[in-house]
Length: 221
Ligand SMILES: C[S@@+](CC[C@H](N)C(=O)[O-])C[C@H]1O[C@@H](n2cnc3c(N)ncnc32)[C@H](O)[C@@H]1O
Image (cartoon, rainbow, N blue to C red; front, side):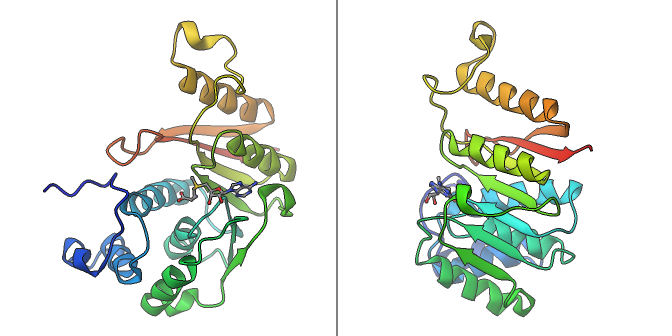
């Protein structure tokens, strides 16, 4: 059986041999396998998002909104230790997030005490201009809330949008040329630019997820 990175199957100790190398990604993969709780695609989504964001943004508090297990936030810290701490914000934090965090701390003790899990909504968390706000697959309009909250704080931001509700989302009548979800994401990108952000439009591999468009922004003033 080929090893598909898009699988929703959990990575477990049976998968340890799939990550044999001494690279950071393979070490992360082994820690995730030891936790035994994370869908495989979440490892690849978090890693591919974090390394693209870290090529652009160093330092700052990492705030992972709609963060679920919080792997993205913790990967951001592993890739750049100049961020002192991270918040993982989600009103329905999965109980297994603690198991994942323990496995990561066992592999990287320096993560201990630097990650706070906050059972709250995006709307209820205070952000600052020093934050790096990240969010992978915040469903539907939650991605727009993330972008708005980040822009209000003039924080750096990166989102990998998820499902699009074409009855609700603004598509700027672009759907004669491009498909509806792409139209929605173009509108999001241009809105961020109009708010005084420099933007980057990137993608992660569609072998990992078809919801693979990454929008990154940094305030210019
Ligand atoms: C599709 S999951 C993505 C989780 C994680 N980012 C990932 O990539 O695996 C969407 C997450 O958003 C969370 N969520 C829903 N409404 C929210 C809100 N108002 N504020 C913050 N998170 C929310 C859900 O509990 C869920 O964990």
